[in-house]
Image (cartoon, rainbow, N blue to C red; front, side):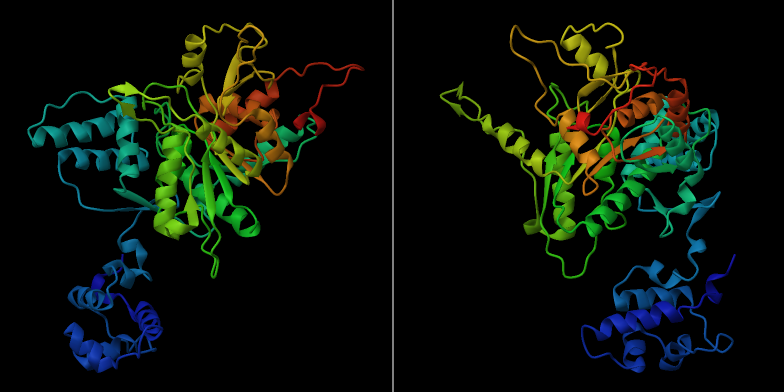
Length: 482
């Protein structure tokens, strides 16, 4: 490893001077040196082109220059980034931020252990020792607790991934090609989806990889930004609820964003919730709340005048302690945007994990029989193993539907090359749901992890196609997509 005293700061120093020239007349070397408390000859020596004659900067001098140019100290180490980074199997990350106590230290320790591929018992032992040393009762930690601690560390920014421009180090393109090949074997009359697969970093003894959703979010940000850059007329973005979409939204920031940084662009974006979940609590990650959070983050990046988000939530108030009728046309106002959708981002349900399907079956007293038993849902629309819609039970002569986006609207997005319907999923248990959503024609792109991709390939291999007349396997046509 290079020593701090041997690090060259020539390139970042010249770049910072060039940026300053864009704002004001560039000061002379002696003026910068004087302001930073460095000898003029020393400052000039930092920029000598000949590496053998170039002067090395001390850490104190680098800190002084960072204060003068008003940039982070890390700016001067860009030519030698490994000094601050951890790396395993090509994936690099950086520990960020101060922590206020043992709780936050434990979160970061959990994430570090998972990133290094340590087994659950080993990570739990690290955290037990940390807590006991601080006088805390060290309760046993299991798989579920460590997953949430890892997600907490990543969500709070205690660990930051440093990815290359291509993101190749976190992608498995060979497995993505295999998933595409498995879909081609389905004899689909649908456009082939764009597929990206991210690597799993956690130890195999984790039932779910807590890192995968964050890598999926980074790749999905790039995918959406590239689409918006290539389609300047695209301006309406729809997002569903759920953990993966929640991670997609909550990781939007200065490092990664789905909004392209296009010079001279003043395009406005409208962000709409795709689902109005009939839940009584925020234990589930609800789409309307995510739309509000996404518009807040987008406004920080783009400015408040370039983004808005209509809400499902109606306005209500009380008169003499009596609740007045709630305004319900807000639902209609949101749904009107579905015909203008350019991008839709959503996940797929799983009966064994997120509980959404089980919750709704119980809430509606619905017990559909095979082959109509729902195996997954996309934007609350339940799908059977045969990729067929499982409708809600009718109320007399009235057909019941959820208030969010419907399958036909998603299928229209999928069939249109100028639209993007993006599915996010991770974990082996998402393999079958992922394959069902793709077979149903509800996604034109998917970002998943290796576990979900392999499970989806196996699911596609074992699917028994329903025989059509004439002995051919039944396929889905564009007309059926609406």
